[in-house]
Image 1 (spheres, one colour):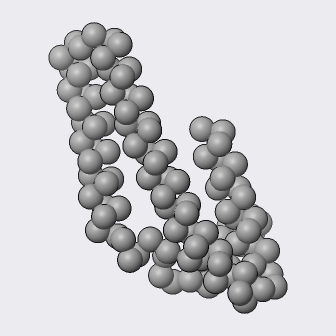
Image 2 (tube, rainbow, N blue to C red):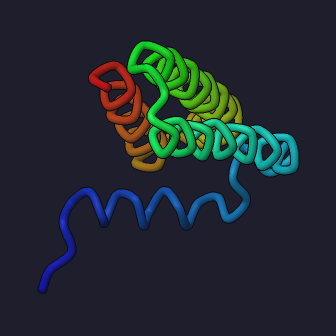
Length: 111
């Protein structure tokens, strides 16, 4: 089975940077994700405890905003680290990184 074009682009761009852009702040990101995980567990408890619908929806909104904020932070680091480095190198790598970032932004906007 032949890999898809997206898989080939991902392989090419992943190989270019073995260290992700977020690695310098990895612990802070993990802490943030654990906090979000706690929010989601809180949602489970609310449902288990038959919490009023609006209260659950309020917590869903908070968890959603937290994930969106995390995603934007990660995207910013990706642009400053991975995309910027690829642009300095130029060529196919730069084109692939810009395309990849554009697709990620489109996915975030659609969600």
